[in-house]
Every structure is written in C-alpha cells, then in structure tokens.
Image (cartoon, rainbow, N blue to C red; front, side, top):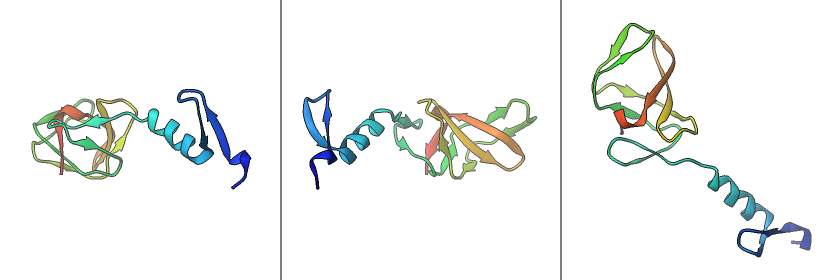
Length: 100
C-alpha cells in the first residue's frame, strides 16, 4: 500500500485509508427508516401492513396483514417505495408497516 492510498479526513483530523473514508462518508448520507415498532428497515425487506390503507388514485384498499415484498428506501425517513400487483408507484408511510 502506497502513501497515495491515504487521504486526510478534515472532520477527525486523521489520515485514513481512501476506502475507509469513502465508506464513512456513504454511511453519513444514509437515512434510518424504522417501521411502526422501531425495527430498522433496509432495501429488499418484506413488510406487513398494520392497518387498512386506501390507495389514492388506485380505487382499492390494501387490507391489514397484506405482505409487501422487496421494499426500497427512498431517502425519506418516513417513506418506502413498494411494488404491489395492480398498483404502480406505490409509496407507503413507514408508520403503517411492520418488518417481517
């Protein structure tokens, strides 16, 4: 490993390996998304609805207990992007789901 593999971190005042500093900066930009009971959610998780939700524009209601597979985080701590048959662009509030 050469000297050019280290970069100066102005926040800590230390010289760090370039990969470590890149990972640290990526982690700082991540938003924690938690479900209704406080479980940490991540991309690809499965969630269950904890109450009936009317889907605006789709003319249907998702019932309590409905399983949503493979969620995606949006960068907003309260919203998750989902796919459900018959509904395009479904975005749910994290407060209405529980991680499976």
